[in-house]
Amino acid sequence: MAEAIIKVKNELGSDAVILQTRRVRRGGFLGIGSKVYIEVTAMNDEHKNEPGSSQPHTVIANESSLQLKAELTDIKQTLKSVSEKLSSVHTLGKFPEPFEGIHMKLMELGLKFSEATSIVEKMSQNMTPLEAMDDEKISGALKMHFYGIVKTQRVAFTVPQKIVFVGPTGVGKTTTLAKIAAMLRIKEKLPLTILTLDTYRIAAAQQLKTYADIMHMPFKVVYTPQEAEEVSSNTKESLILVDTAGRSQKDEMKIGEISAYVRAIKPEVVFLTIDATKKRSDVEDVISRFASIAPTHIILTKIDETSSILGIMTSLGASKIPLSFVTNGQNVPEDIMYADELDISTLIVKEVLAK
Ligand SMILES: Nc1nc2c(ncn2[C@@H]2O[C@H](COP(=O)(O)OP(=O)(O)OP(=O)(O)O)[C@@H](O)[C@H]2O)c(=O)[nH]1
Ligand SMILES: [Mg+2]
Image (cartoon, rainbow, N blue to C red; front, side, top):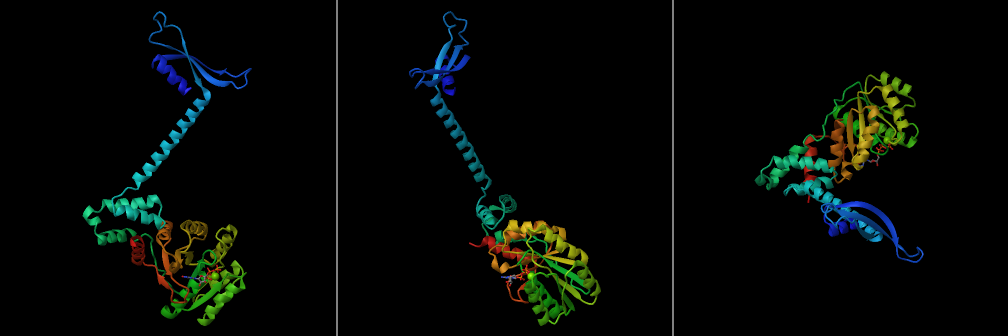
């Protein structure tokens, strides 16, 4: 049809009026081997009243070539939209150096395009071109930005107090509990009791009992929420640290089960233990699935095993649950430290500026 209209325009001018279009078969023998054409009947509107010009004019275009043309038009259209999209991405990511490099690095370290863009936009607006060439100034601006990316808060340990450790399987709950128990025992000299709800895996209870024995602390395994409630309400003279079994965060019902124990114990502190080696999306998933247990603080484990903490810190910051401890190794009790906003921002700036 497009080809036919071009023919009409060429032959009758752009004011031509189309009177009729139809498909016709031509050629072949008894209909075999014939081709389909489009027949357009048109006349020139401008000269329609002139003598001799009132005859409508018919043009014919081959349908297979029309189809090819239509496909070509389609391909051109697609190419145009792809190239528009590419150029918009290019323009959006266009910052003067060194900001463009920082923008790319932030995304490499796990930030989303929009998160990286907003950081770099703020930085580039607040710096003169001369300042932007000064590495110290860039590092200072980054540090300023990442300071407070996640809120940190120390727990005020006291007696009596109940503290429960929750989190997915294998993140380091038991190890971290042992590290904190040793720290409270040795440095703060607080009387402690260790409880575990880890009833269905004897090996896991044994792991904690060994730590408790070494540190000369009372150790109990509880089997029901009622028992957990009795033990915790009758233990007024010590700080109770409660370990829970690591259950898959995908398993809603078991989170409900831990939640029943937590409601029975009524702890002042619920530590959600998060593994720093996990993907950011997995961490966000853990935070949302454990939300029903209402964690009061986060402990980030295994930062010694990850190459970047930026993405995870951004997600922890968004959760609004304060970060309390960071652990950086398997050694009990030494591989644990209080989370500190300045340390975190220094570490992130190092990651961003690393070549
Ligand atoms: N590299 C490193 N390993 C750690 C850290 N914390 C714990 N681990 C190791 O992680 C593994 C699992 O630790 P656990 O304390 O048993 O973890 P959990 O959360 O109690 O596990 P479940 O009770 O099975 O859910 C052990 O091999 C620990 O030594 C850490 O900060 N860094
Ligand atoms: Mg454990």
